[in-house]
Image (spheres, rainbow, N blue to C red):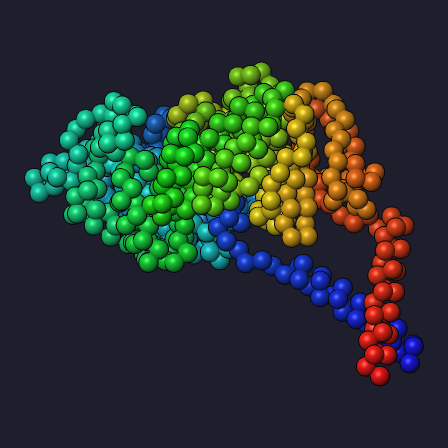
Length: 506
């Protein structure tokens, strides 16, 4: 009977082990906060169809350069390998002359002929979905192009606000009704104008099966419009994603648009701090954690925010580092590491993975170069795939457990997975030590190079080269003799419990 009980106990332990492993390996349901977004300027990404290359002049930074829907479709496998799970495209609707960027709408219901047909756009979306990549379209409802025909249509006189430039950026009414950069400002308070724009937004969802909108110039449109807008698009597709551009430095101002149904925003306050801290060595990382603490307080779900270090409106990160006479490769690797390991949705602007340079618009919108820096592409792909593999990098708690000037350690924990991200933002090599109760009986494995680091009790001592960042996964140290003693003790306790229960039942 004793042997039988031992056999049953060991079988029970084996069963528990298998069940725990199965639960750990079970793929968690994917939500928008699990995505990695790649931002594509359609005209400047990849030329897949020479037949639509009329008026193309690659020597003119303000002209069309030939990128199109077919070009993006051809590069979907490239994006998949990069760890991308969603793409955001600049506006695809028909634009007026020289509107290569998409923000000067001429026709809200037609695709831009330089980019391709609606059928080609639909094929792009389908091919992306076949690769488990979602598609977000940039959408502009605040204004039209400079020469839009509605301006000379007497029946649409009330479709625009009176022509007046924005003169007071602290006056919300002026911000909403004024003409941004001289662009005709649509009167969304007019029921006809509003219904037209709402119908149009619903049309593209049903016509192409896209998954989300990046909403341009959100703060220039009244909140009551966005409330109705968000309700309409989510009726068309329940899990439809809205990420708004509220270009402002105050998170309290941005978060107010949460109440209008926009669940995500490009995080400009975090962008400002990331660029400031990582473009130049020696900067403290503490403000990054402060931004997160504020975000937790102000936003409905701070994990939904879109994090970025580059976009089409700002000087490229590489140029920022060069202006500080820093090593752009080292600086960019550190910035990318934070981008992919901090809470929020990483947004990678095309070309950043190839260390592309660029000054102010339009220099920051150069044609994509897929061969410029393969080493950085490989590094970025590794970060992208690590984020998809490890739930703690997407959903984990975020805390700063070491704050020592330019040296910092962040900790992320999700269920039974713990990851430490270690930064040495100084040029000099340094020893970085930190204490944490979870370290005991464990070791750290550097996910970027597979090297292991031994833990001494609750203390970790690391030799970290200057201007580097490391991502460590906490693992049980199976070489620790105390581990096997603990397992054996646990097994004995289970056996004794079974014996006790058997005798009691008998």
